[in-house]
Image (cartoon, rainbow, N blue to C red; front, side, top):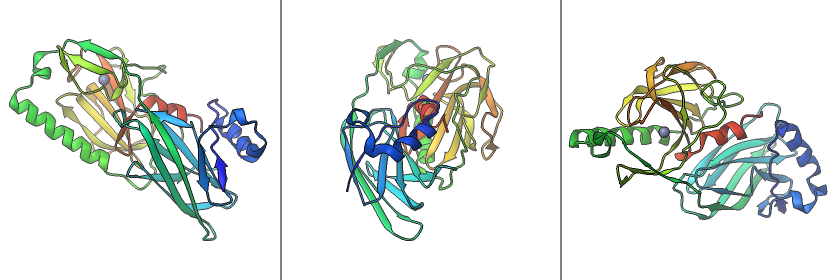
Length: 311
Ligand SMILES: [Zn+2]
C-alpha cells in the first residue's frame, strides 16, 4: 500500500498537530503533503519531519499503526536506526536519522521493520534525498602549534580522535534522555559556525563539527538532557571536554571549558551544570563548542532542540 509522508508541524503544538494530521491525512490537500512517497504494509504509516534532508541535518521518523508497535528497527545508509516509544504517543515509534556533514549527496533507502503487539509483521521503505549543505568558508589565525603540531602532538591528537570515534560507535540500547533537549547555555537560542569549512593560517582544516556559542568565561554549561558522562578530560584540540551518552546512539559534546565539574561515569540530569565556558584547546576566544553525534553522524545540535524540544 502506498502511503504519504506527512511533514511534522514545527510549532510548539507539534504533538497535537501531528495527532490531527495522522487522523485526517486522507483529507489533507495535496499541497500539505511531501512529494516523496514511501511504501508500507497495510495499516502502517510512515511520517518524516521533512521530505528531504541535507548534510549535517537530522530527520525525525515516525511509524504508526492502529495496533501498538513493538520491536521497530530501521536501516539507513548501512547503519541501524534505533527506535523508541514516546510516552502518550498512542502506539507510534520514533527514530532519528543523522546525516553526517560530509555524507555524499544522493538518494538513500530507508527500510523499517517491526511487529504489532499481536505478532503481525510490518515493514516500510522510503527513498530519501540528501542535498549538499551550504556552508561558509572562514579564515582563522591560531597559534602555530595547532596548525603545525609537532610529532608528539600529532600522535596525541590522532589517539584522541580514535577514542572519540570508538565512543560514538557504541550504541547504548536504552534511551537515557527523557523529554526536551535544551541549549547548554541559559538564555541562548542560537549559535553559529556549524559545518564551516575552515582555512587555518592558510591551510584547509576539517569542517567545523559543532555550534559555537561565544560567552563570558565562567558561564555555567548545562547538560542538554539526561545521560551518562563518557568522557571528562582535557583533549588537544577541544581543551577541557565533556561527552554525554544519551542512549540510542545520541552523544553531545562540550568543548573548550575552563573547568569540568563532572567525571566519567556520572549520571546527569537534564540541565545539570557540567562545567564552565572557557578558552582551552584550539580557540580564538572564550566560547562553548557544542557538538552532536547521532549514529556516528555529525549533525547540527540545534536541530535536536527543534525536533525533540516540543514533546
Ligand atoms: Zn567550535
